[in-house]
Image (cartoon, rainbow, N blue to C red; front, side, top):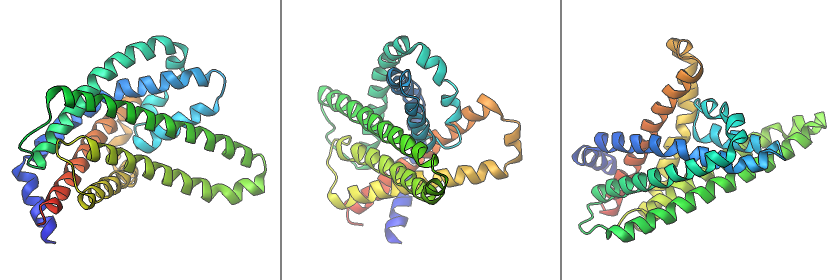
Amino acid sequence: MRILIAAFKKFFRVNGLLLASGLAFDIILCCIPFFFVIIAIMGYVLSSSASAVAGVEGVLQQFLPNSHQLFIESLPGIVAKRTLYSLVGLGFFAFSSSVAFSSVRTALDTIFDVKRPRNFFVGKGVDLLLMLAVSGLFLLVVGLESTLAVLRGISQSFPLVGQWMAPGWALIGHLLGFGLTWSLFYLIFRFCPSQRLGRRPLMIACLIGTVLLEFSKWFFAWYVARVKFYAVLSGALGGIFFFLLWAYYASMAFIISATIAAVVKRGK
């Protein structure tokens, strides 16, 4: 309880609401070209294997609850012009990811009370490596989702087997989503701050951040089912609304988990 109280005080002392707002903007700026790049790359596979579509959809559904349809509807157009989108998206993603990781590092250095931040060029080098690592992580998960889609399709060819395996596919999907989120938090908390975290605060930060983001899937599903004005926010407008809401929630989850890790790090 003392850790939570200390984290609550520190959250407002470092102006966590402002940090979350800034990170949310950078997430929005970075996510759109990032998914365009991922989908464009997978577009070369989509032309020969429809299972890759399910892989991309699976990742978007896990990572962007209740707003993934906004991106899924763009798949056909992106696949048709995959060369153009891959080149343009890659340029915008390189710029936006550099800005995003720089903001993340600044926020973490502020929360962890780092006195000597990284050299500018070293920081940009770390940003580049994190960009490649995160992109590779998402491509790996897309590949795994595609494989699961193929196996799921094969099992559905046999009704009894498909019905028996249905809970198993759902469990695997949840585990894959949990692993993706945890790995993403681990990469950021492990390599982004200018000062290395200890093992205990690092594990705590990853676990809390992952649980909070996984909770968002259930919360947004409950929210959509009960909020009446969502019926007005149909189509692309509804997807944009929940994408913005998710970006801010994800930023808050990140700042909260980092604040608790900072308190644990200081031994309070």
